[in-house]
Length: 355
Ligand SMILES: Nc1ncnc2c1ncn2[C@@H]1O[C@H](COP(=O)(O)OP(=O)(O)OP(=O)(O)O)[C@@H](O)[C@H]1O
Image 1 (spheres, rainbow, N blue to C red):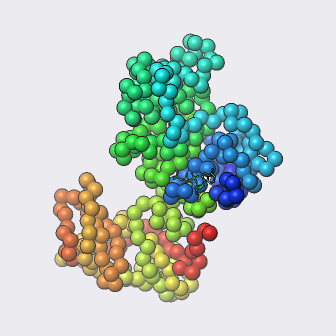
Image 2 (cartoon, helix red, strand yellow):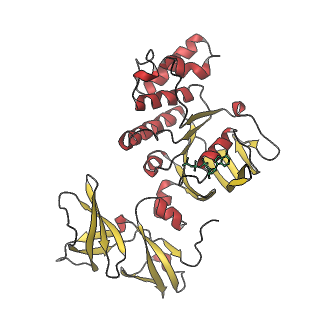
Image 3 (cartoon, protein in one colour):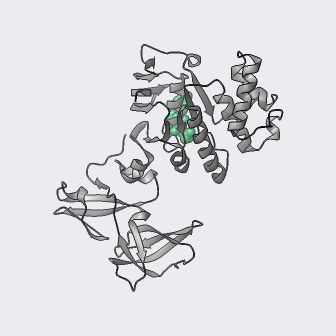
C-alpha cells in the first residue's frame, strides 16, 4: 500500500531553535497514526508544519505522493486537503450546530450541505441537535460537533492535536473509540497528537514516541509496548520498571533469578537493564511453588484489579496485578513467578538519550 503521509528527515526551526530533528515516518492510506511524547517535545510543531503553518528547515513532507514542503516547496495550507481539529479550535458561538458543521462546505449546494450535515450528525450520534447553539451542548458534544465540522469537506487527511484534552479521562476514552470508528467509516487517514497513551492505544494503527524533537520509534502500539527499542519508549508506554541485570553465558542474572530466553542467544556477557511489565510477574500464594518471594510495599485500586508494587530481596521493585476481590496488604510476603513472553533488554552502555 502507498503511504499517504511521508516525512523524510524533516527538521524544523522556530526562531533560532531547532525544534524537530531529522524526523521520518510514513502513514498508509486509511490508517490512524498517533504521536506521543512529553510536553514540549515538538508534537504540535510537527503537526502545524504538516498542515503548512510552519516551514521545514530541511527534509521533505509528501502528502498523497506529492511534495508539499521542502526547502524548495511550500504548498499553502488550503491546498493540502487537510481537516484539522486542534485543542483551541472552538466552535463559533453565534452559529448553530448546523451552521458550524456547514462552515467549510458553504460553496456546496444547499441540498448537499443539508445532506452532509444530517449524515455527520447521525455519525456523531447527535441527530436532532442541528438548531442548538454551542453553549447548549456538553463538552463532549461540542467536541463531536467540532469533529463533524472538520470532517464535513471530506479531507484526505485529518490532523488532531490533543482533541479531547479538556474532557475527563472516562469520556476521553469513549470518544477516542467513537472517533476511530468514525474516521474508519469515512475512510479518512488521520494523525493524532496526544500525551495520553490510553487515547493512543484506543485510536492508533501506528504510533510513535517523540523526545526532544526526535522520533524514537514508530510502530504498532503492540510493538511499542512489547518491543520498545529505547528505554524512554519503555518508560513512556505502559507501566513497567527497568531492572538491573548481567548477561552471563546467554542467561540473564538479576534479582529475579536466572532467566533463559531466546533473545539472549546472541548476547555477549555484559551489564544490562531489562523491562519488567506487570504482565510478566505472577503472584502466587507462598504455599504454592514459586521462584522467589517478594514483599508487598504498595497497592493501587484499579477497579477490576489491584496494581501492586513488590520489593525484591535487593530492594528493587517490580509491579504485578492481582484480582480486586482478594486484596493483599502492605507488608505481606507473596510468592512470585516470572514469565517473559517478550524479554526486552537494553545495553547499559549503548543506550543514550538524544541531546
Ligand atoms: N513560536 C515559537 N518560537 C520558538 N519556540 C517555540 C515556538 N513555539 C513553540 N516553541 C518551542 O518548541 C518546543 C516544542 O513545542 P510544541 O508545542 O511543539 O511541543 P508539544 O510536544 O506539542 O508540547 P505539549 O504536549 O505541551 O503541547 C517547545 O520547547 C516550545 O517552547
